[in-house]
Image (cartoon, rainbow, N blue to C red; front, side, top):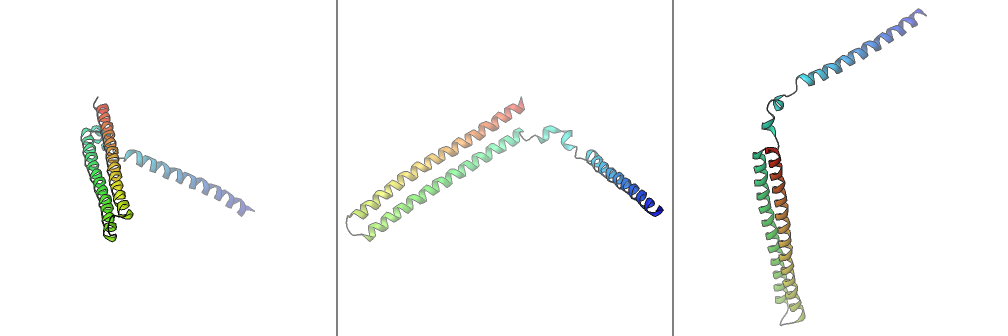
Length: 148
């Protein structure tokens, strides 16, 4: 009987010791995080602003460059579509002899494809310009807000 009583007390003391050690370790981790964090950002917050003028200018340059690339890609795609339409119309022209319905239809389709490709390219380039302008306005507004 005495052995059981002794083991029960030893188990209770062991739990208290384990809980105490766990709490001390948790406090040590919290303490270390608070005192050894990187305080360089707090020392000079002006150098780390995301919306600084240099960053705003870089964003605007990147937007302009990417918009130019996107517009060139759109123009190249429209040119390839138009070239494919002309190529198909010329293949139909070579395959048929004389002025028949298929040849006229192929030429009409090529003209329609050319027209639609130009319209789609113009509409997409206008959307790219609108997006670029919206981004640039937003960057300017942010720069103005931080400079005031």
